[in-house]
Length: 204
Image 1 (tube, one colour):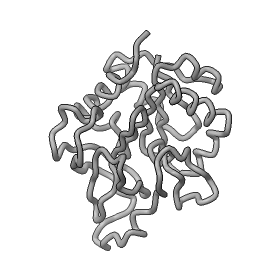
Image 2 (cartoon, rainbow, N blue to C red):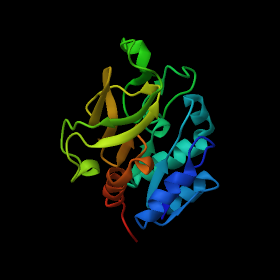
Image 3 (spheres, rainbow, N blue to C red):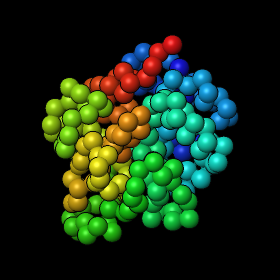
């Protein structure tokens, strides 16, 4: 079973629908202790980084404990940003700290004035290395974004996108994965990415 974590900041309806379309068995845990039975965990999210403050210490311990059992974790949009140390959008709110670096506003990185923020719409992916998450996905594949803040490019970067600046569109580091775009809104490519992630989930 896949645990889709609801902390009041995710478009859970579309995420659940996409996961149902690929045959994933899902549920929304009411408390962190339920993560003990998760075969995989998804942390979605839209909007302000401050919403991740609801993922308090018990949730953090539950998720870290699951990772200690090699349970795959996937962050979507703000869920990806939460995997990092934090974000300048809410400097007082710490991320989970699984990946080094701080997410920043696209405009802070000298975004040309011809580009609008938030970044909303379809953009292409580039792959600096081969990863399970993007197996079978061609270079330049289009996915759907809606965000104003983005994660820095680093060793865990699995895909990049350029929108005035280049940022981490996806990360993959062992059982930890994340995508800045919305796979549940990215058509067949998005469903393929979710299927690829699902292949990393151990089935009882």
